[in-house]
Length: 261
Length: 315
Image 1 (tube, rainbow over the protein chains, first blue to last red):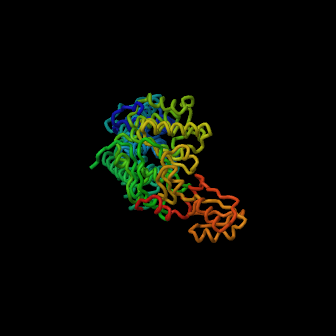
Image 2 (tube, chains in turn purple, brown; image 1 turned 135 degrees about the vertical axis):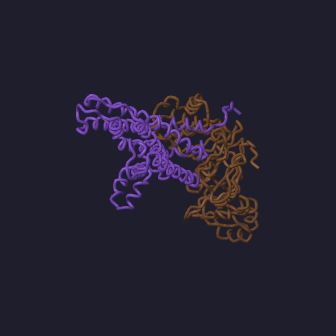
Image 3 (tube, one colour; image 1 turned 45 degrees about the vertical axis):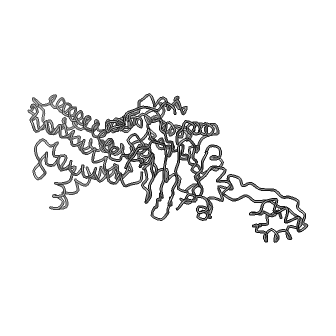
């Protein structure tokens, strides 16, 4: 027998490292993060220059944060694309069979993938919300007399934006596992996050109720500076979004276990 | 009772895979042992790939078991060090470089980074390590798959149709490679739909047709038991000879050129029968079945009958 490669038993951490390597070595990751940055920072800069902020007045901290986070509505789609492709590109290319032959435990595979995607999105989300605030602040101070310091609610909103994007990426990883097709997963995310919630309030009281508990809408409450009347409070909404995401990940795991790769 | 006897055996017990309408694998049982090349032979669609995927825990059997070192592969604690598999040459993300594809696999099993460079050298892809996989020819993809299989220096190798898409040079290389791996004491389980290919490489053959095992033995055994040997007899009095041979227990067929193909009787017996009757013979020659003919005979419609007479295993 030739010299066998001696190496200790792999752990979950090795799976995460491997998934991080997969993420950073395809172009789609960089492009979708650049798109997210462009959408978030660009929108912040544009809104900060809008006539809603009359020159020479004082701007409250809450307004500055609201402006900073205006672009996250669109930026979240780019994050969804990143998370969906992290899973569906494995199915599209057939790489899923190499991956599962190397990591046969479906639980470890899914946890590794979810952790790598969520970790990447969390770090980028914090950077994005911080930079968006900076952009909004710089543009607004160049016009307004004064921009107030951050309040507790606005700090929560800025961090909440990063947290919401992270949970959204996990939600999309689960969708990717369930749907396996890139186009299908991305279209579904756009429908669930952007299109359906805007239609719901039109359907009377039932529509309103569903809208209130719609996971992504609920999750986005954590990035509102002040609680929105009629909507769940920031942390309750975010908690509900986490619960739904955890449930969807559990379903994805069960399907992944039962299904032929 | 999960005893880890790391002896490199693959064992399949009564393995069945049924899809909605078709049965891809039907009550398959066999053992693949270390130190030799075991060829897994069957026509396209016979269930070879499905069986291999079930051994790797990628597909789930409808019933039965597939065990690696005595337990399901999915329970392996160090998968890449246990089994190296080449299932589908295109099983890599096209946008990733060969190096990064292997690196991600290596990291998942805590295999050191230098091993990636080693296996790239081993398969001769070192020069294109930094190129995206989507630009690879089928032969290069095949080599990349082999490199991935060798990452963990595993005791067991499972290769599905490894010569597909390789040029003659590549085919020679893979034959030598598989033989060398077996000589090192590894388990080498390799599928093909080409009998001639297996005759060059394999020590032992498992032949399947329509999802069932139809032969399990050495190459020579398989040809012998395929039972296509006959004696070719040419005689100007063939019409008189044929009934005599038939009466003596031979199975006689008249060939297109007027010669007789006789089974169940050997040359000596036929010669004697002809001499007793005073008939003249122009040709009396034993015909050996070719490998391909044996294979065809094994895997054609008579599969179930052959399974009973050859495999000798309860199925």
